[in-house]
Amino acid sequence: MLCAYGMLWDGRKVLLHLAVGDKESAVCWEGFLEDMKRRGLKDPVLAVMDGNAGVRKAVRNKLPRTRVQRCQVHKMETVQFFV
Image (cartoon, rainbow, N blue to C red; front, side, top):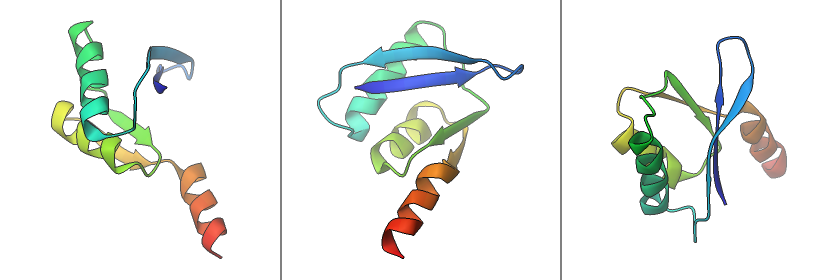
């Protein structure tokens, strides 16, 4: 499953899109983002994601004005795994 949530300025979370994806490749994520753009999504200010290279590449290609940040929870879990 591919999933995107948005966070509004008042802190509320909103489910933006949910879709079946056969893998987490850049191609799958690009199609996912294109679906959202067709339904009116403007480039978000910030995209927070795990360390998946496919989603990072897709955001760079499809949402060029969006800044990208690595999720700190996922980052700390990775650091703890290797320590």
